[in-house]
Image (cartoon, rainbow, N blue to C red):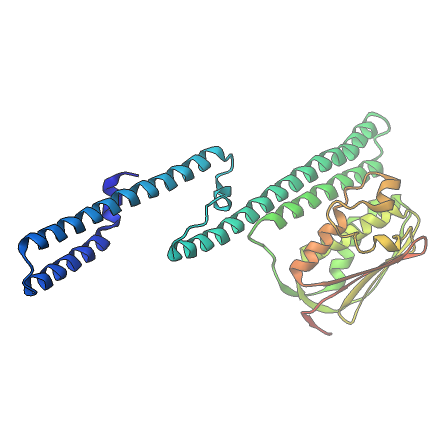
Length: 325
């Protein structure tokens, strides 16, 4: 910090000191004090002001130099706010408190961004390993009998994985492209079932669909949500029966498959949680039900999961924006 800049910052204070000096001089003149004494008083006052300026300048420069040194030592400059020394001045303390709030908010945002980036990279890495399975299977099918049904099944698995990572990427963006409109849920359910028919047939999964109602929501995410549940049924519970019912503003999806352990019910929608079934059968990314939960939150759909191992899994979606037929 240059002395000229420091001097400019004290101009107002110096002006008031000058006015005070003039007033005191006038008062002394009217009091018939000798000019010599007045001169001595003015000189002493000027000396005090100069000493104050120099001392204040040295103290402020020392503080700034200390801050610059701290800044240079930090690899992450946004952490500087946590190392600021506590000032003595009342106004400076108020600025200090504001800077602390801003600093902690910035640290929180940075940590969240770093965490999200790491989570995204982890998911992309696991997705790459997962996508290799259907692609390798396609290569083997083409190299052998080139069975169209098997090829379609593996291509559908690759398509499902691609759709999952696209939805995950969209959820990370600030802007949402949800298109809320009024529609019947039955065609959306049928579309989800039709899209996964190859996997359901290959896994020997039977399915019943019944009911319908009108709702205000977004069709594409809802279809994706239902697809994820059908994929899970085919993946973890081959040979099971799936019943999808739509009535009274609630879609229920129930199968009589492997089920979920009671102690894991509260965690199955956590990001990356594979659970006992995922570890036992392998090939699980722990992202399916996580995406389901996040999309339900975006669409304000109430999600409820009930299950009993080796008996059933019951998942219900209740819509708040509903017009009954």
